[in-house]
Length: 140
Image 1: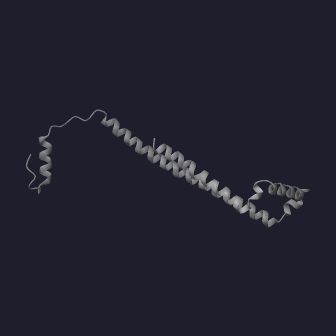
Image 2 (image 1 turned 120 degrees about the vertical axis):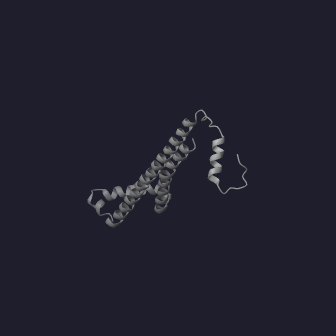
């Protein structure tokens, strides 16, 4: 091999270094290791896609639940007892249910606070569960 004083013709220098060296055999199991790494990279991509789809689906379910809750709350306030007034004994049952609710531990909480707690719990369930499985599968 020539000394590396003049690197103007780098291609010929590399070719001569390769030509002087004998071809060495491929290490045992190299092909299997490469295939396993490629398979693992493909599985990682599939898992990322599944995680994103799962998170999007859970977010849509949460949005639908929050929307249904808001709509139901709005309609209940807008109706102002009209539906319960049409049901015989409906207002009496509504008063009974409201009194029972206020006498329990839930009644100690203000309604917006209870709604915020339920929404926060939903967000935690919809975001942490897929993230937990993603992280568990990622580091195995």
